[in-house]
Image (tube, rainbow, N blue to C red; front, side):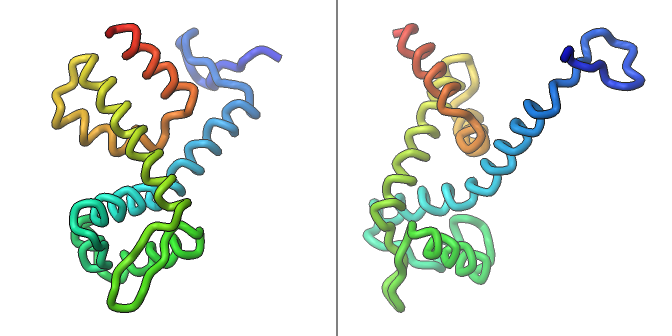
Length: 153
């Protein structure tokens, strides 16, 4: 079945994707948005543990720019997902799965930053933009980014 033109569109360039393809795209975007928060928290907790030896909820809240109660709620979700453990008065610790997630997110972030800088984006902007892109880019696109960067070397 051919793609349908957008109703009321006078442009021959506006083409609607097939419904299953479009639904799949939106579904992947929703899934990425749902995972974004957990990924950011896991990455931050890993950074806090690596630099200071501990990740206290108050530090997580401050660095995420959220209320303490919001951090507590999200850390609770991380616990339910098996990504962190928390001990009273001792802070938050990543499980093996949490460390793996943080490592994957950090690697995606670095690759996106490297690509953005390679195409001329200033480093500061690339770092900020990568915070959003890293969560929504597919593995296939990441592989293409890596291939592009490797070919440039």
